[in-house]
Length: 176
Image (tube, rainbow, N blue to C red; front, side, top):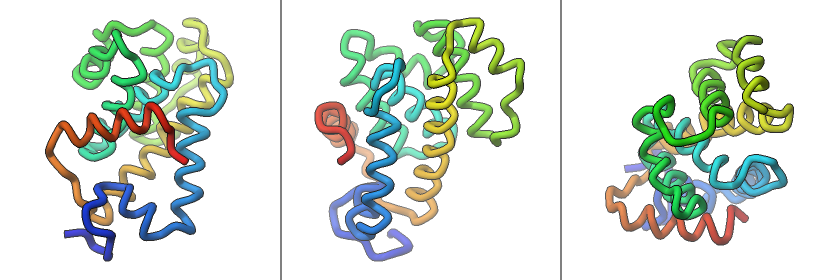
């Protein structure tokens, strides 16, 4: 049972965004900008970063929601979502994305964990300032979203089909 009153039947952050629309509109807008706004990282790659950070934070709802969105956006490369979750170093993704995921992991642990060497490695793989910015901000924001969802003990369904439906909706419509 959630720690606050939430609309029945709305899982995870969805109930929180509906119950508290003042903050909800800003949190949705931030997710829209980070995950669908202009970027040289594809929406699928950005959802993959969000799903990875959520997995590292053990946020079941966000890990499965954003993993499903990433699968829908990545299409025939959908299998990389589980590869990244299991072991991103061995996943079938670019070396640049692996370097960005290393940075995301360090942000998840604590922002000051990111070193100049981490950034230099990512740049050596072709990462731009914008991609570094997006990676760090996605990782930081998803630490907040994950803690928001879990800190208020929101309802987390276990049915994979619900996450697939949510992922399809997020992939098609975004966050607004």
